[in-house]
Length: 109
Image (cartoon, rainbow, N blue to C red; front, side, top):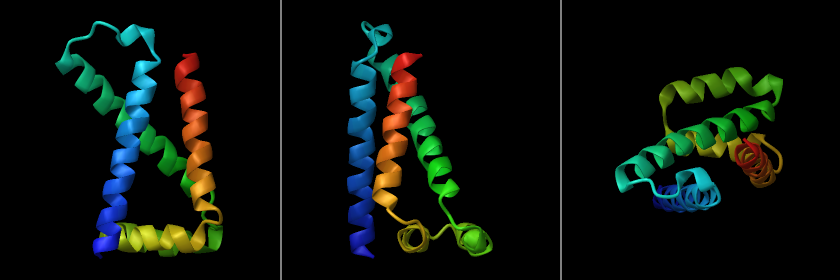
């Protein structure tokens, strides 16, 4: 379980770094006060997480959807993580692709 927590913290730090990079590339956020910038980052983080999660779900085999729903209902992050690792081929690549696509879309808007 400690490894999962460490992985979660590492992922969290990575997402925060990713958000910081996105925000730094948008000229529209220059000069915002700290509170407004924190709100922008919080909103962006929710959007990134939703986008990545939606992308991952597209790669779950149809015959595993019912099992996934049961695991999601438990809200056990360790089991959810384990499920995706076991059932989504190339999970890291899927996440990387989702992040790249989100970045492209975000910076072009």
